[in-house]
Image (cartoon, rainbow, N blue to C red; front, side, top):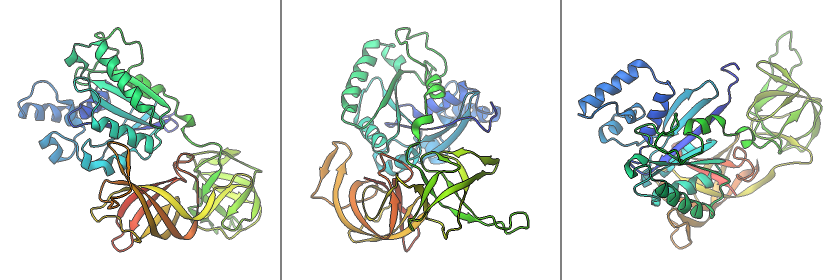
Length: 418
């Protein structure tokens, strides 16, 4: 299989401070031979300088100087590695309560979320919080790594107790696939290689699970959606009459000859050709980038959408959204914000703040409606133009929006359409 065509798995890591996330990622990179000699030498040198023994693998991932000095993760750090089976992107997100927004950013496109639990402490507030955010973001696969098993003498009862407690909690969440793995990131038990110390555990190692978990069906292949990014008109002698509509497929399977509807105009037509950089296709599906040619010439532009006649998105100017607020300036009731949705940009006004969510208790607070940085709330918006959207549960691409401050152009929030 060529490197280009290898499947890409994005996963996010979360856990409480000092649960060993950075060590675990360092171990994954180290044991899967995905780091360079000079990186390893640098880490060895830093480890010695800090008066520690061996190789502190956590230093491989803590890129910011402030993180290395404090020994914690602050920003979202993206790491890339690959094995012969798959390519991986890791979003290493911080565990602190004040970095909820970073976790939401890192997890928004993930196929899997890796939640670390310290075997000595069991499930803590942060564990619940991260599991909740993973379910809110509809991450399809949850991997619960019960770490530091070496510090509880690789005791099976400890593992089973934590597994039971987490399972009871996760029933309340909207999570389909949960995998539990007992590990020691520090010593490498069940990370890449099977542990000799836990012969009672018969499941996969972490890397084996990541390489083999089925992610092909994580995309929506039912509801056809192509948000248009731009109209391709080469205007050359060879392609004199060429007019294609280019974009990245957000859902469904489009085939040559399919009858489609164009939004917002509502005109219907037929797909005559699907072009890509590598040549023509008979059918296309997410997340491919394609150029579609239609039977007649229509006036379509950026922000419009191609869908199926009998399966259309919701078209509306009113939306209910779960928003995670990113900015130190609070969300303003009746505030005006620019909304980015697929390839469309519209202005909007906040009509109502329904409630603020207490992430730790999952309680809905309808009294306190002050939405500050890292808060999660349910709000009602009205936009200046209709958006073509699906609920976030149905489609993570057509169901998500970004809030932008009109004056500073800063991203101030991310939302999931209900």
